[in-house]
Image (cartoon, rainbow, N blue to C red; front, side, top):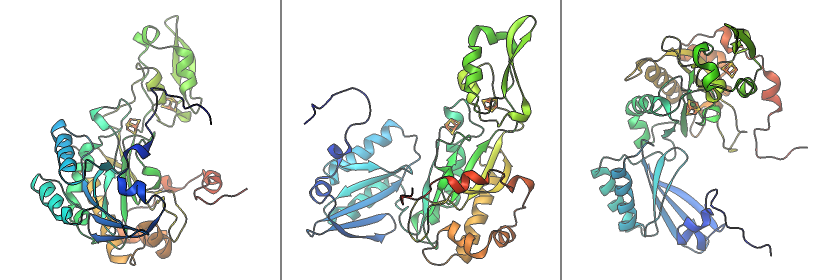
Length: 357
Ligand code: SF4
Ligand code: SF4
């Protein structure tokens, strides 16, 4: 057997952190049920049961919040809890009598229990104006505004099926906006502005030119010094050059905003995984509560509630009733920006877990 290499890089083996009941019954699960919104029970072939209580979190957490989660896990779950991909926190216990006690404690501290089954998920999201330099919009602010509006759909099974939501504050999309039922994607609409004054002192010109995925940056000479210029028609406003060169800011208070995408999913259940498709090309940034974005998301959810069949995902519903009818029901306009001239990619990407050769 090869000698185990110990490095200080990368995540530790996840099996070190699994609940003992999970390790004992690994790969031997018989079924699972949603007891009520936010509570799951997994039943193993051995008869062992593992209960999960899921709460929503804002993703950016204070030390006080994390300490509360740890104390709750120590009190009821032998110290075991986990974070889901959509920023929920899950408390795991093999003792059924602990479930109501966990719910009582977390709700008393202000944390909502929900997000399982036919509910709206918590929104997986990115850094936004809090942290990232390429953001075209905020993340936490919009997510808070949307989740406040759909709070009842997180804590109750009010929807036809699962509704997973995501936000990425630029098209580098650190969030799962490519494959969620409803996605909010920050967009820039103007190329970066080249600040010639400091260019040579801060940026490496060849590295910056190489950073552009569309080859839109060219060498230039300004006032006898080496500089760069952008071919605007070739720029897709991705901000990759700004990462390489801080003297090419792309943030633009007038032109930045968000787009709304719908109908994606990752699961293989019933139908193949699907990419999201464009619904609204542009909505303005309107902090602190982003009313236009919140209303658009609520409109989509209302149409889904009124037209979706039980367990049908939003994208499956749209495919069944047809996109023209979906645009009509939601009242959003079909524009030239909805015409996708990148058809080959959508056909050739492998979007399912099935192998093909
Ligand atoms: S999505 Fe874009 S702006 Fe947002 S955190 Fe990721 S890279 Fe930064
Ligand atoms: S924003 Fe993206 S596409 Fe535009 S110049 Fe910069 S790297 Fe190139």
